[in-house]
Image (tube, rainbow, N blue to C red; front, side, top):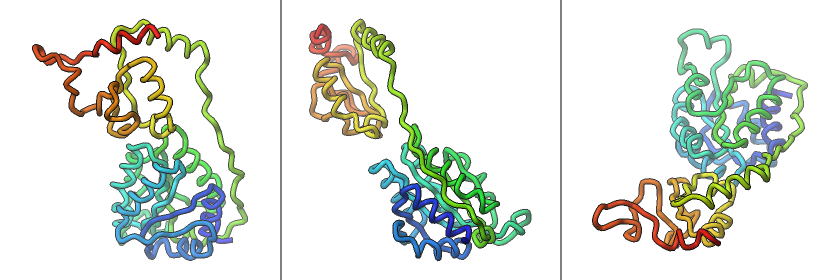
Length: 277
């Protein structure tokens, strides 16, 4: 089969359901292969940046990566903002870009630029495909890396001549790995530190939302009375009207936590009163 066909089959094998993007000449073979897919739905967007943001939100809400597609040069650069945002917001995403033929990558040519080098700073991992036989391993690694904690963006580049190459390779078997849980002794040590703390506070981050731990966090706070300060990406992990909510990291300090004389933040008496429970 063609390399572009194999790339689509590998993405299907990994459970990819959506690719958002803008077609171009250099990814024409991939688009023709994608047209025959019964699993992956291609969503045409007006701009590559919008495609990247759509893929990011899909990944953030579902935990599964979606693809965003752009051609070489300006198509790839247009993806940058959304890809960088996905990587910083810990959303799994696969950026797919076309590239000119490998026989002209070494010289100045129309819209040829180092896309892999450009994406290096805004992805967890990225690479270019130079050998069609390596596609199964590249896709398996890309999906594993973008899904692993902390999730983020990956990038795969497919030159137009490589997309036409014939290969006998087949998709790799998918293995899902689970992160180990904390040791009981470590948990006990954390409990002792909290129990002996005079003014504990919880800083809730993106992982609270990502791992669906909001319910457990609220139960913990209701039992202990410890206040929660959240990052922007953890907004909503606790009820904003709850007594223990301290709002966001750079948000306002509620009146109950301010000393009128000195403007110093402090915990109300209910926190210390509940520590013995």
